[in-house]
Every structure is written in structure tokens, then in C-alpha cells.
Image (cartoon, rainbow, N blue to C red; front, side, top):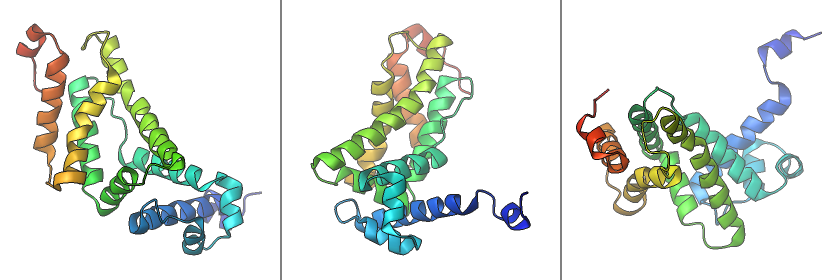
Length: 204
């Protein structure tokens, strides 16, 4: 029988602990980056034992990668509007909103400047590969709708689209807005479309 307490606290103790650890992980990363990140700090902030964290996540690197992916999936969902142009605009706008937040900036810097050790290379590779794999569904759907050529390189398109925002975040520290996202989308997408399609482009 489900108790009244369980009804008031959906997900149970395990879910609450996982959320506390995820929140603590993001906080420690934002404050210390990856180089000085420790599970000890996370455990102290989350109010749990280190052994509990290792038992569930296995390693510090797994904890970081899983937490970053879950956080980014929540803040940067993959849109499905029925049009690749509007899908890419919405995706890039979500990325821009994420990178404009203090924690988004901190996460971006942590991944970019975490060093060349193998463990951090794997975290970076796993994070970006998974995120790009999720977002490539936008291009796959567009190919099925014959909006873009069948040989469109989804990863290259997405990397080209997102790179200017990352550059501004990490290098120039310039702000960006929705208008920039729209212009970047048009610039990248029009570059892969046949010229006749570009001239007939319809704004959503």
C-alpha cells in the first residue's frame, strides 16, 4: 500500500538523493571547474556518503558526464516543429539561453579548459557526441521530408551552427540574442540548400 508520505514525495528517497547529488555536482563544477572537482565536495554538499555516489555512478567521470547530459537535455530540448529552419532556430535559441546563464557559462568553460588528461577527454567526447547525436534527429527528419539533400552531414551542420555561440562564450565574451540565432541558422542552412530552394525560402 502506498503511504500518504510517499504520495507527497513522488520518486522516493532514491530519486531525492540522485537530484541532490546532481544539483551538488553542477554547483561544484560551476565553482571549481573540472580540474579541482572532487566527489568529496559533492558528497558534502548533497549530504550523502561518497560511497553512495560511487555505488550509483561508478566514477567521478561518469557522474559528471551523466549530470551534464541530463541538465542539458532539460534546458536544451530537441524541437520538432515540422520544419528544419524553425527546428534549428529553436535549438540554437535554447543553446543561447543556456550559455547566457551563469551555470551555462561555467559548464562551457569547464569542458573547454579541463586539460588533456584522458579522463577529461572522455567526458568531453561523450558529452558532445551524445548531444550531437540527439540533435541530429532534426536533420534526419529534414532529409525524410526532402528539405535538405540526402547527403547532408548532420554533425558538421550542427557544429557549424553552434560554434559561433561557443566562440563568443569562451573567447570574445560578446552577448548574443535571438536575432543572431536566426541569422546564423539562415547562413548555415542556406549554405547547404540548392540555390533555387534558397530563392524560394519562406520565413516561418
